[in-house]
Image 1 (cartoon, rainbow, N blue to C red):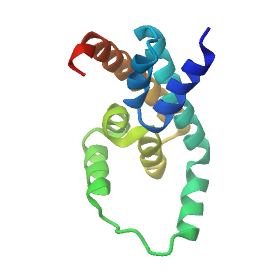
Image 2 (spheres, helix red, strand yellow):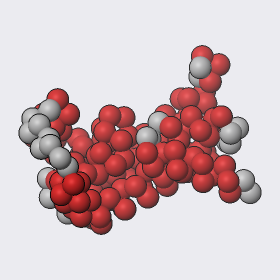
Image 3 (tube, rainbow, N blue to C red):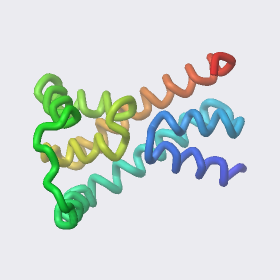
Amino acid sequence: MPWGEYISVVLASMLKFVAGPLAGLALSLPWWETAICTVVGMMLSVVIFVFLGSAIQQLINRYRKKKPRLFSKRTRMAVRVWKRSGMTGIALLTPLLFTPIGGTLIAVSFKVPRTTIILQMLLWGVIWGVILTFALYQFRSLI
């Protein structure tokens, strides 16, 4: 088993979801192994930041020299998504727009229960992991 390759895909998708399928393709892993590793990487980020999200936000705020802009483009978009579709919308867009870390921190900041965050992120992570990985492998000649 290529454990090093699996770990590479997991680590890539922990930071940026789309990086997982790209790493799996570059390492010539089968598409289904890449999809599984991508979802595992996203969920590792989600679980870590669900349980440490508040502490990380406090730590960042303590050492931040300048206060962040209260309403940046990104926070406005997150609030708009939250108002329209709640946690489902945040989880749906996390793999594509927010990154696993960003989407989880958004959900934590809206005080969504941990189990809801984890289950919603898992659902949409699996859906997007399969779709993106399969599509990328099918259209690899265009890349």
